[in-house]
Image 1: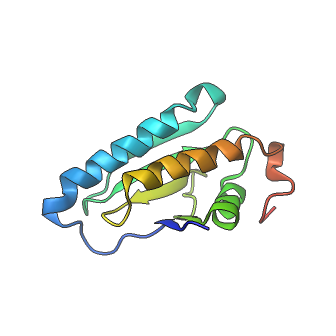
Image 2: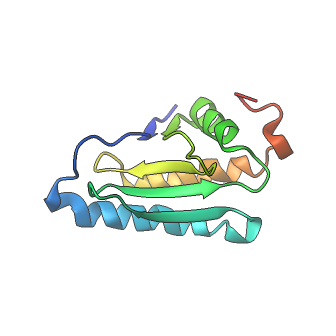
Length: 123
C-alpha cells in the first residue's frame, strides 16, 4: 500500500521551498474543487510557518470516519478534523504532485460510501 503523510508539519517551511509548497497546495485544492458539484466543501491556504493546507468536508460522511477510511484503505494520513469538522491535509516539502492525484482518487472512493459511513473503518 502506498503511504502519503499529510498529517504533520514541524517547524517552518524552508524559505527556498515555499513557492513549490504553494504550488502543491494549489494543485491539491484544484483537484478537490472538482468535487464541488458533488457537495464537497473546500478551503485552503498557507499557514504562517509556510506550510500549505487543504481542508475538506464531505456532504454525507463524518470527517473522522473519512480520515479513518483514507488511512486504512489508502495509507493516507491526515491531520485531525478541526472544530468545524473539516478534514485537513497539510502540504509540506515531503509530498509530491503524484501524492495529490492519489489523494483525489481516494476521496473519489469516499463518495461511494453509504451516508454515515457504515462499513467504513472507524464507523
